[in-house]
Length: 418
Length: 152
Ligand SMILES: Cc1cc2nc3c(=O)[nH]c(=O)nc-3n(C[C@H](O)[C@H](O)[C@H](O)COP(=O)(O)O)c2cc1C
Ligand code: SF4
Ligand code: FES
Image (cartoon, rainbow over all chains, first blue to last red; front, side, top):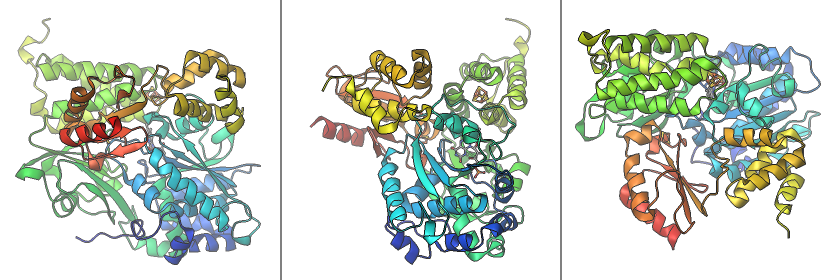
């Protein structure tokens, strides 16, 4: 199956730093249109049906309308380039291969809601992208696409890069803002939501890299064009990161709704060494681990959710029969124990407890009430944790228990004894 | 130049506002590979913050070490995809070459090893960073070669 390259169309084909190259490939046309009619942008985004690509799938036009509707002397656009979700490396491809499409998306957002300043929060694990992004920003400024009086108008839009420092939690939108403000990256209580009160208390739009890279072509080609791709509830394409036990790992672009089996077989080429597929973790480290028998699944937000999977940022980690699922779950919970910021108890204590239980399953000492307690604590974390980290971190273990019950063996006859 | 200028220079470059704290901490790490107690106290003074506050920020982030680091810092990804695809071989190669495990610095002070979480190279796992440079699709053999290069 052929890829549908809309976001990836320039990757490897243009000099990523050069705005002239980007323009020759049709770039900065959306920004020109936006400047000629800023009032119309939010409605076009609403009509397009674009939903956030960072994991949660929030409607972009609606998010932008909150910020547009909140009067303020200063508003901000933040690009979430923290890409910390294990199993995801699509944003890296976009930033290293076509950074101007990101700048254009940010500038259009700025023009649409009256924000004059944008930040790219780049994870510390991508230091090698800094020179590319910095040079591309300089090039775009020199060519008048960003900076003061963009494209000769009376509008300004500056872009500044801020580096993270190795904390997964800073991918959460409010933790990220704390981090830009120079503090520990601990999530804030919501409301207020960032659209109304975000960075330094000012109305702030925060979107994922891939989300923003979709914007220029939507404005240029129209909402109807965008809606002709993908599914009814999730228009457009999606970048999928294939990793794990797969012959052709990598980042691929397909319309939303592409079947997971197609991605596994035709695109990914199946498991290496003729091994059998055992499981797939969908949606990154905090996503659900599904049974290989569930492979027939259209990949959009609703279809994945209905089937007990997670679209998330479009990550598919393939796990073959040689891997022990308990080891996978153990590694994932260790990740969350380390990355929990510790601000709230259910997540700080809960992940440590989950890990203790998983160790019991690993060494074969778990009893029936351990399984019950594990599920109880995990379910409690999902509803009572402050942010998405604690809410989602039990998902891998809970989904693994559901989909691979025979791997979580308990010594039921010893129930009640020590 | 006296030592204290490192902090003063970083503050001159990035500013003294609260939002400049991270860039200043990062600048010191870039130059000295870690944040010594002395530097943290100098920074606290520059920003008019308590040293506990500055220490609290630094220790929140895994790439802002407060313990001395070697000349070259190797960060091996320990997260799930790299774990499944052979991170052990990477760590074995480093152990055999440098006699260090995660958290340690080689006796000559040339290398420190950190086990870190996902570095965004999952579709090229296993992967590591040496200083600012990514190395991907690692095997025992190519890790040995990479370390040879840094040793020569
Ligand atoms: C623990 C945690 C980590 C997150 N990491 C990221 C990330 O690395 N990149 C990202 O775009 N969104 C991440 N998010 C989601 C953001 O909070 C936010 O929803 C997103 O940036 C909004 O952009 P979008 O609507 O364009 O997807 C994370 C959320 C949580 C709770
Ligand atoms: S859920 Fe976890 S990461 Fe989120 S605020 Fe609570 S402790 Fe921090
Ligand atoms: S899990 Fe190792 S790079 Fe992502």
